[in-house]
Amino acid sequence: MLEIAIIVAAIAIGSGIALVAGGLVGIGEGYAAGKAVEAMARQPEMEGPIRTTMILGQAVSESGAIYSLAVVLLLIFNVMLPLVNRLLELL
Amino acid sequence: MEPEVVFYIHTFPVTQPLLFTWIIMAAVSIACFFLTRNLKTVPRGAQHLLELLVDGIENLVVGNMGPEGKKFVPLILTIAVYVGISNLIGVVPGAYSPTENLNTTLTLAAIVFLVGHVAAIRKKGLWTWLKGFFQPYFFMFPINLAGEISQVISHAFRLYGNVFGGGILLSIIYMVAPYVLPTPLLGWFGIFSGIIQTAVFTLLAVVYIQIKIS
Image (cartoon, rainbow over all chains, first blue to last red; front, side):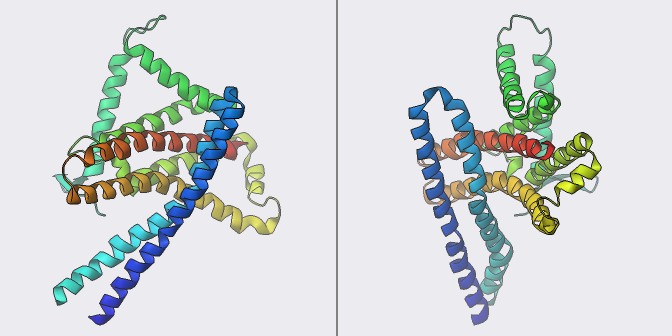
């Protein structure tokens, strides 16, 4: 029972650490948006292409956060919840 | 994460995403049938909206791929309409977004992947297409292969993760504060994020096909 509790705690801590990637991606995307605004202010007639390129770059750089989210969802729903249910049965 | 089974058709389980996929298919088909009756050269009413949509997607595709991309316009338009309605239907109480299920988004990403590679083979020929995997050096083959596969996975997981993550956050907010607070969040995650993710998914589909055929 203690072993299961330790595994559950480790999964919870690991999920929290994995979601740090979301924050880092947030910094990167904000930087990209800021640069895009600067470019638009300099050349307002290029607004359309700049916005398309910005969204494309942000979408690609978001992959890191999406991978971490997928890992966390897998950990929580496929590994942690069955263990928690078993722990509750043992209690 | 298993979807709920709504009812059975002779031992065949009909799950929530499948049911809502059928509903969206029926709604889009009926809307297309009735909105394209007696089209006029000078558009009136709903025809304005349709022409705006078709023109927008056509400009996006042709602007990215050039004139040869015209044959991909129906596919991209279908993906855009389907994903858009799937994302927006999550706002309706009791409805379930098909894009909240990984199977839907993986299927859409796989369709884009296959269409891109088949178009590349037809345009460049089998030999040139195969040689593309060994660029710039022959030992780069595993990396190129992993890049192709991870492209599908990231394309599918981006839409799924955004919609599903928004749904989880909303259900937590519903548990903590069931009144007032969920409404603006529903607008943000359901409508704004849904439209942005539709645009991103469509744009990435266009760019992935364009990278493969060029």
